[in-house]
Length: 224
Image (cartoon, rainbow, N blue to C red; front, side, top):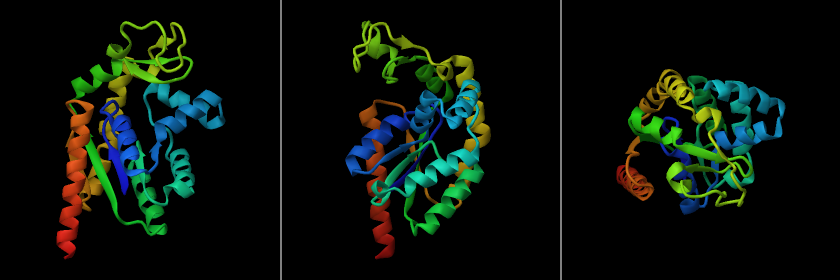
């Protein structure tokens, strides 16, 4: 199973990617996680990424394409993968197409999670991160807690810069201008599955699994 997971910031891509990764036994490749690790380690990439993330802008195509190429060539991706947060531009979309063609991979499924902008802004602005372990929680998860439920650190919750409302709104504009048009690239190839991302996590997962099952059934029916 090879999946490219699309959707606006805060729509639930990371949550669903982790669940699908567990269900299918394939790696979840999150550009966000890779970039946050680089930021934490203050690598040259991390410094550049931090500047872009603070403004709600995208990291350059060259950096992201190189990271993804190295990752897809690793052994644990041979049986499949879930790309979360890539491609975000037409340049990246064409680059990943070329990469997959070179690797003789042609059965990629593009899944797009959809939710209205107001819901997304509310979700993101209600997130808090732990300064110590970097895990992210919703306010409802930690409203009565003084210690992080993962690392047990005291009073470690904070609002990340890229979860502030003004930055979120800018990120949404960047998504609409830079990333949403990339879907046209995949729609022309009839590869896109649209999923309603509103509702509980389990409900969204069930919608995805049902859509994948229907896709496989249609594929086999067509080839029969």
